[in-house]
Length: 272
View (cartoon, rainbow, N blue to C red):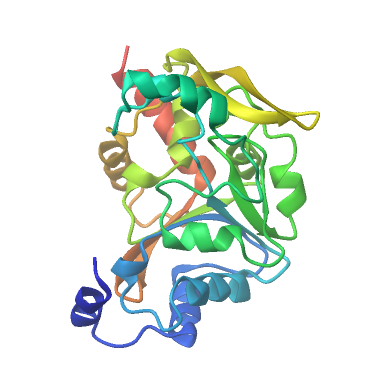
């Protein structure tokens, strides 16, 4: 969506003070651990753009909290697996030979949106060391949450998602549906219904670039909207699910553990 279209859709300028007010009204508090997924254009015309949204989140959580965003880079992977779009077979040899190794400081995010990409380079933000499933975090729990991100099953129990789960953290969806709720992949993993596949990526091992192979789940988010709506219907008025608007965007703040457990149970019951 172009900036002109966003301005036309906006009833007013969405400012830092408006965002902090709305974030507190939906239930975000100092000291929380929260993973955020945001569509800036759905929030409206934000004065200062993604940086304003990030700073508003930080101001509400304070340094006592932990702000997390996905920083995935699915393009740092085996080009033979690329489908959207694929590349010619004749290119593969050169790609294998030349693709840069994943670098948490330099590798850009892929398909994560402007807010997540800008958050990646914000002061005091760090990134976990997984070539395709990294996460960025800021705040008090940053280092513990990002440490020892398992190469195998990068969205499983030994990932930042698993640590948010253990900490009883939250998910905040800002203008984003359940189809983009990364935490639900942890529910897929815990369901035991995932097909296990092998993937490979270029990384640095003892300072040298090399391709490594690791175990991963064949994740699918096609049913996440259906699962999310079933989750909402099962918990009318529950404290673990709060819905309001942030700016102009419909927003949901929910218990990460609750949606992960519900996803795992739903898949166990409905997908044999």
